Image (cartoon, rainbow, N blue to C red; front, side):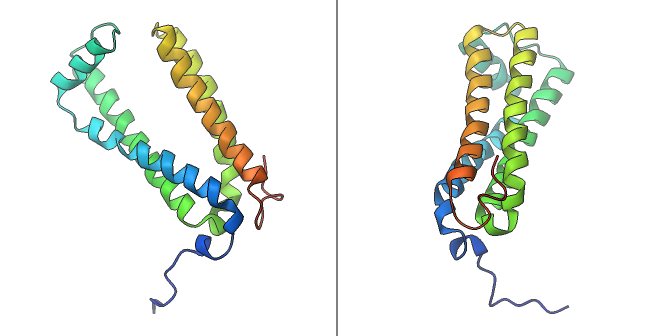
Length: 156
């Protein structure tokens, strides 16, 4: 198998120029989400202190709690990688944007239910779920109104 190293630039720079706002939004969210990798390896003491500083109930110092917190952080980090890959070649991955938007909106609704059931403060519940819902709506809006190739075919 021969690899053509002359054509390694992503298609997104040449094809779908009107999708730049969507591309930059996905890059921004993806880049910020990469920060979750730091929380995956954060010392337990810091997790406990951050929980106290946020005014939520004390962070339970139990192996399962740290396991879940670290795995969720790692998962968010990998979501960030996925967003960056998608944003880097929107021409190729444009059909995935609609399911991404719908999934993000659905995730925001699920976050609200989970946060409310967990007894988290209202500012946390509304802040997390509404920001996720708005993020999904923004992806859908930018996909629909971003113009370029495939925007009408793949719009939410």
